[in-house]
Image (cartoon, rainbow, N blue to C red; front, top):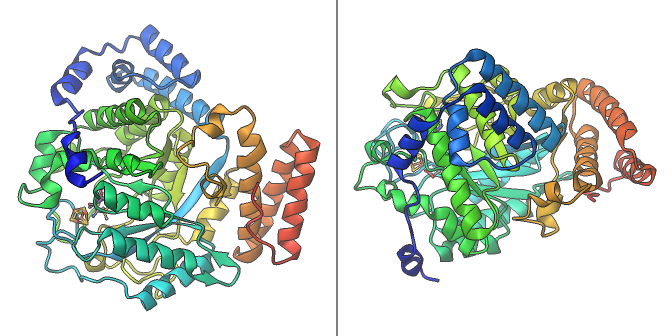
Length: 473
Ligand code: SAM
Ligand code: SF4
């Protein structure tokens, strides 16, 4: 279908007034809140009225109940696996002028750059050399970054091998495409295509995205995931940039977006991102809607409870402490060892460089991958680089892992353990290796099915003693 035909069907499913009214009418009485929490624990998606009731809680004791329930639900649904990835910025040229972003076209101080193929390969080799298997490629919006060009880069990413390493899943965060553009991306074998709405509130959206820019078109952006799904890109990621408008409204917007995709395609977004605005080169923002740490934890907990089966991503924009808390409350994916300056994976080590005029915004967690992996292990999480579902064609059905009885035990945990064994064998420091294999032993002992336990043990032994890799279930 052509872009124009697809656009004709585009419907603005965000009704600001309705969201405001639902929030205003919500009554978070304790008995009602507990009923809603019970529904979440039964792993049912909440509706907007229920979510609004949670968002309107004032009583700190009741918020504690929400946090406790979010932690329990996180554990019930996801167990202790945490998926790890890294961002790779490919090009920062941009025709838009988003008020919050260091790449905005009016910022003359930022160094404009697009990685050459050689630089791209060096970055990929550096990332693979650290142990990454999952990337998100990031671009500004610019005529140079067509779907064909991005697809070409994706192919290079899959084709570049280093040592025993290979990138196994390439996700994208870039400007919205038309249906044909998404088809081109799908043919290149992308994983998730992320587009964040930034703010679901129309007036706020207009105030930070000038009308004469591509990004000024709210509806084109809002319906980008519909076009992606029409094109067969089954895994889409939605998001809102917290700090532009009221956080309660944005959570309601993310939920409305999820419900829209579920109703239209029978499946919601693969992931939800909820970045907070960070310091960026030549960016001065009105701070009236900035989200405090306390409120940010409420955002995470309510999202977890509202959409039990949707992956939640928390990036290195946040501090290590906030990331630890986020993981407990519901986050299922994090980046690690991230560098945002274009070309910087090959050039700098150990969090030593952050140059604001070469990056989109500042990071607050610049620890190397091994430090993050080591901490996760010591906190009892299984770092996972599993890409098995997507590569075996199980995309778009991510809820399968939750809806098929025993799926997590049969596939997800074993794959988390084998990919962790690969990381420990090929890349980890001695300390992480020691702690990691200790964790693997404890996790193996928890696998009740003896045949399965032996199969996982046997694959891990092969990983440790041979060059065989990618032994996924
Ligand atoms: N140019 C593409 C677009 O706008 O969709 C790619 C997006 S950008 C490279 C990735 C995301 O970073 C944006 O969607 C926005 O939510 C977020 N972002 C931009 N400026 C930010 C800032 N100052 N702090 C935190 N996140 C920011
Ligand atoms: Fe460009 Fe994206 Fe930054 Fe907006 S958020 S200025 S579109 S890179």
